[in-house]
View (cartoon, rainbow, N blue to C red):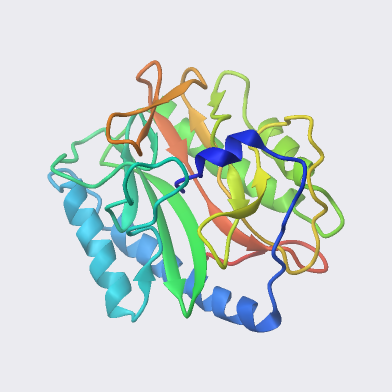
Length: 266
């Protein structure tokens, strides 16, 4: 979510924050709460509902749990103003970071829901893409491909491997006919919304840091039906596909363990 513009620079010096046992305990609870929020707001998605309703629903649910929406008032590097929503809501050709408003969902839309919860100071980050009523087979396949790409990246995130192993696994899982968004990426998370390292969704030829126990990452492939090219809308946050075709986005916060990665946000 809201990748700082500086991620594009992808420097070679890393400052990866390893989480303590207490941090991880809190993060697990944060992730469980976020998973409940996303499941609940998913059930609110239907024709006739405004994206502002979805935002308000998420805000109220997180606050009622005693937590904070991690994205609300967050201002990434390069942004002119803080993000005004409690969840990113991206419809159809909006790739990520859409802002809730007056738009009324209609049959055939697809909606990306990207949320974050701050629980006792620890931040979890997760996203899903859901259909509004009946969608085309092509759009169903787009959603399924993106979901499978995320899981491929998670399966590759093993202790002792490298960030690039994740990136290559994600790219390999996505058929060539789709556009993989390259200027946005996964990232470290936990103490802040965005931490190092940068985790591309394609093989950029950079090995990246070694995956070690206690590292927490947010993996998030973004896949388009057409071109991989995107542009930033006038609101300063929403990224949209250059050709106007639809896009899907899935994300989990994961913990690197002694063996296979643990999904925090489920």
